[in-house]
Length: 88
Image 1 (cartoon, one colour):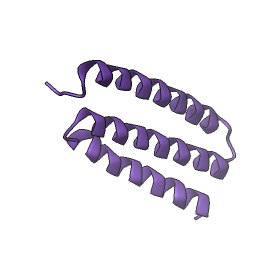
Image 2 (tube, one colour; image 1 turned 90 degrees about the vertical axis):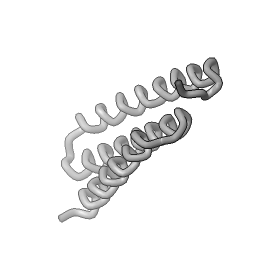
Image 3 (cartoon, helix red, strand yellow; image 1 turned 120 degrees about the vertical axis):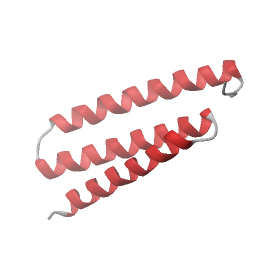
């Protein structure tokens, strides 16, 4: 098994572990940070898998996922700024 595939699987497992913090996070800010970390780990896993498989489509998917992650972080940050970070 190639080293690229092993690292891609490791990053995917780490992203799955951050989903626990995403579900359990005591505050909305914790959930936002966990979601951003999971998005970054998934993008890195997709880039490594793209290098392993030799197909460029996974790079396109990683790029779109990263763009949506940035937009999501900005929207949630703006929402938390308006709400004061309080959960209802």
